[in-house]
Length: 224
Ligand SMILES: *Cc1c(COP(=O)(O)O)cnc(C)c1O
Image (cartoon, protein in one colour):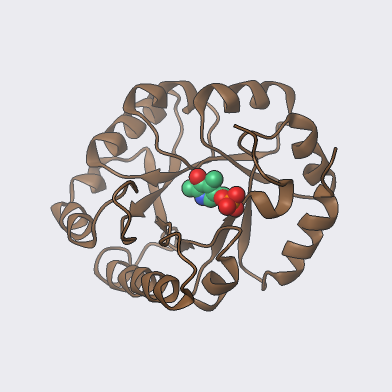
């Protein structure tokens, strides 16, 4: 292993205040890297490809909580539904319906986050704030008893300007408060604000994140 996974992980965990969870993003990294982090006590790992995660689930300890963090195609939901702990990037009502359907088939409830599109980049998936408002106002999600909406996630613009990143994360946090008050005031499950990656998690910690998703700073650069 070229990378000091355990040392990197300890350093990041030291930076995180009480109550902020770490999703260790292990996509494109081998199972022995995951085991190194696991041996340090890490239990939450994030993956973004269905085939890759399936192979890892088969060989790794059963008490790992797997998060699906990437864009998820509707036709892939059935493969991950039996074991996935949380689907972090739900970006359409259609996907939410399909997750509910597959969760029901597996007789379980799947945790999800709604992905917001706030960054300038065209390539990012997610609901605009207006689309997310409209979706939650619509109320159909209340009938989907096999999904649990646990909060919001977003990726800030990939820029060097901290002010832009801070502005986007603050907008997301304020939007969280608005949705919490309007739709989830009585629902303690709706509590997660997932933003902050390797390059911008120190900013996220100042912008009310509860769940950072960090890959490169733990496992090193990915080889695609
Ligand atoms: C890959 C990925 C990350 C981790 O990015 P790093 O820069 O390696 O920390 C976080 N969130 C999502 C959605 C990702 O796809």
